[in-house]
Length: 133
Image (cartoon, rainbow, N blue to C red; front, side):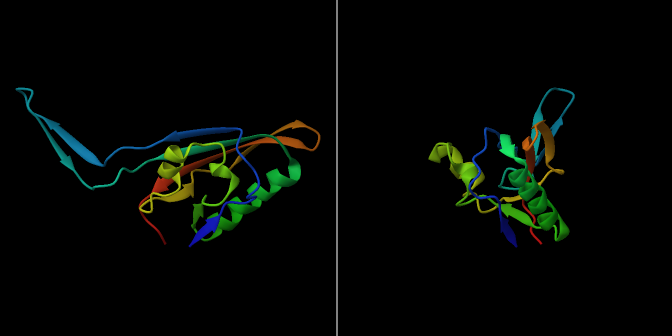
């Protein structure tokens, strides 16, 4: 079950997206002829990194709690209707929100860096998977 990314009012300061690639295997003969076997019709291994700079420690803690909640049931994260898509053009948003075949999962715990008392930078990394519990 997808869990809405919280806090929903946070807009990332930075967003890095890679669309991944098709699962395929390439064979090359001694004469240079190449044969490619594609194992699916969807790209896999898409990544999304969100950076939240200079946010309150309360918001940082909310992100950490969300990570714990999602990981406890190996769930996926839903970004639709959250601040994550704010500031990105709709053409870009469609890649990491509307591709229904992809299920976003945390790619490790969020990294929190304290920058000032009560303020932190948080970086969250996600990987898109085709599986779903």
